[in-house]
Image (tube, rainbow, N blue to C red; front, side):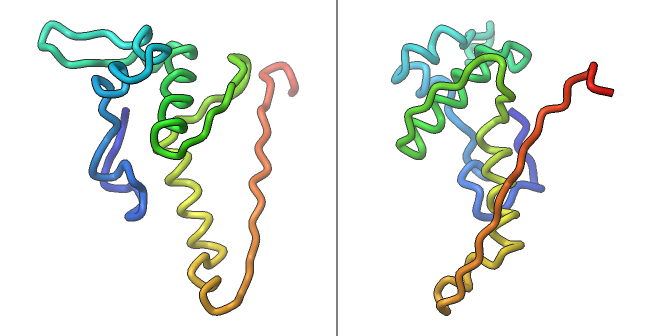
Length: 118
């Protein structure tokens, strides 16, 4: 999982990436997607959509208390990168202004382009 200095300062994964070994021990549905390298490091194949979906569902459950089901044909962004995006949007709409009684809202409109749509 690519985590770097450009992660938002409020991103919970900035300095502490997900512990795949811990998550695999706690969540059997995630465990089936991890491999242990010869060096003893637990890894995940990010090219496997089922593994990415399992990781996303596991992180949302572990870190945010959310239980979701994501169909495989859907785009599955990684949680740390999506959280980064959410923090950037919060900065743009001024989430700190809520303390001053100012309420701002933002909307994220996502779309998936199909290669045969052009």
